[in-house]
Image 1: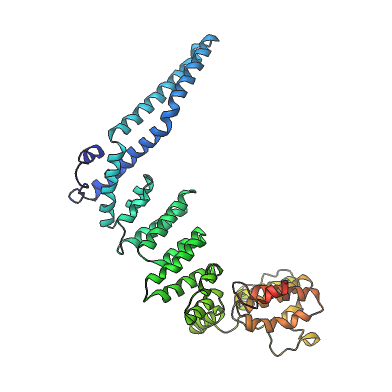
Image 2: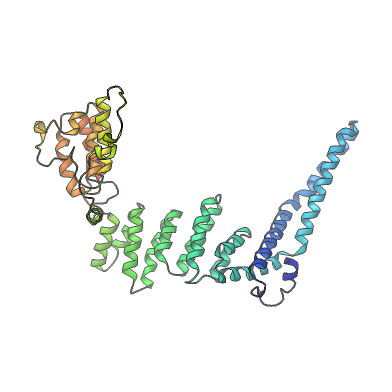
Length: 401
């Protein structure tokens, strides 16, 4: 089929519409097969002569040494099989030259994209290593499916092929001016220059420039790449846009946004470890006594994670308590012993996650404790609270200074 279709390569691209989808897929399979035959022939042709000479020299040496015919026969068979395989490969490669195959590729790709077979088109270009041809056929109607398939397939490709696919997806998103999607791919590539270039390219879309920049800023901040945009934002002339974008990349409003979503979902009420364990649903089997220390430690971890970011709980945070020796002994922190106090105190950082202004006052009273385990947990809590946020007066950095 490939030989027949390529025979008309002196005219415009092959019109595959009258032939249908099955013909196009069959043609695609033969093109890939012939292309691989060319590749194999090119890579092995240079070494075949040397291999033949080595085999002849080895056979002559065996004859001089009086080797038995029974040992020479398997070698002859192996040589004959290799010669037959090489002959088949050359025949397949000689059917159509590479220029004709590339001509067929140029005909098949637009046909597949036109008939919503984007995965087939991408697979063909991946096999012949011509992903750059996609840019000629991408528009606002088909870019989404093509790029989605590229991003999905990159997970199954070995390096550096996966990198080539991501680079192609980035260029296609940029070509159709889908800058937020391009920013996501730039982050996957871990390419700061591409991320910054995408952010600056939003200026070309004057009306939507600020909204797109905000979206890219949220994407970068969520991937811990907010600092990569800080210099560009600081150089902006518009003070209002600059202030808004600085808030986004610093995640200073992250706790506020989280609490707004929690209120909308009506899940603000603090939970207890019992809400997770549901011990009343477990039938008692007369087991041994539970280790109290381990129970309190488990409560500390579960309490921290189940109330993470909600800035309140029922076991550790108690705004009415005084600092120092007046701390209530019912507090979960003081029910633990030794290293368990570190985990229980550090759980305050999880509870007040991202809320630097509201969380530090809850932690501050434990920074003056004479118990070194409590003090260590409080320092850890400060770090957890500030995780993922940026501030001019970074409390965690100030403690390390």
